[in-house]
Length: 232
Image (cartoon, rainbow, N blue to C red):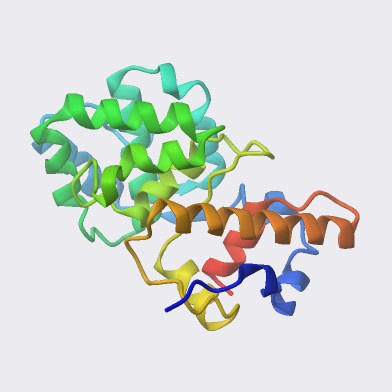
């Protein structure tokens, strides 16, 4: 299938209506219930650092929590980097373990390589989305087993600490489904996206955010659109 001409795609009206609300409520306050005890148990069983994933009695994480985690993290210790990874995975998975046991055990098989890939990705994420994406998806494979685009792009997104100009965004199957079915990106697959596709996605949301900023008279950020695409 020929690549879809993204210049012809328009933001759905329902998303434009949703952008009238305050960003902080929809984005920073986007909170997910997590299986904190499961994570702490699995991390301990793998003899890895980074637990506990939350403080005592805390069973929910927000985007704002993860933004705070990422500040200065590219120079952090192995423990800090892995705790950030566990928390991103916990937020992205909610109460469903999914493939997380395999992800944890993959890191345990070679912690130094996993931490090195994370550090490279975090350092590149604020300015070089292609380089950041490829740090976790070298040659179209996962640098950390079972950490594919849906979760690696969450790592890249949160690496920006919520900065307005952060160039990396979350791209997962739910976002992709809305882009295909509602926004008419016909050539977008449902996973395993190459670097070029990820860059086209970030650029498309950048254009839409610029257009909506002009319409609303306030700065619309790209993650506001990503959030709507995830849950239209």
